[in-house]
Image (cartoon, rainbow, N blue to C red; front, top):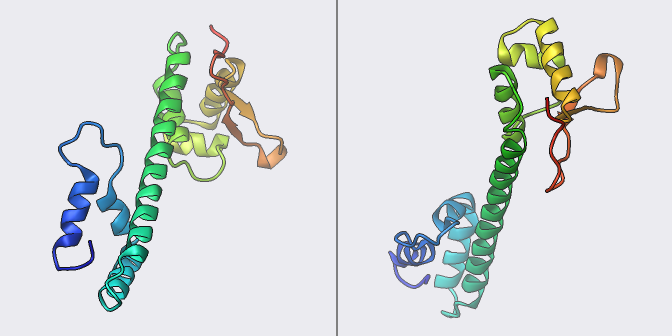
Length: 166
């Protein structure tokens, strides 16, 4: 509650439920992201009529953002786990594994043969072979733009589909 100094720490501790194995979000991290808004709503509430409704609205909205963020993170982790399970029977080299993992993380821009070669410290020819192998197996697809703009992306995997096996 925004009434006395220290109550913010108490509220975050309760909301985060540090000892609970069921917690999948962090209010502390989310409040850090929204620090300016947090201090603004605290000041507004403390200098107002002691009606904590606006603060509660803000706090619950912040909690909703934290939970949404956690759900997005969990969905990404599950997607990556399903992908690796679906390709577990395929022979992939370390370069392929490295780039595929990067594609699931915060990969910036388009995947090109040149970018593959730089990321894996291999030749353009090796990068081309690695990519072609993944296209043949149904793991990567060529993006529509061709020529000098040729790039590749992970093929969308439906929940029950498996890439072609070797």
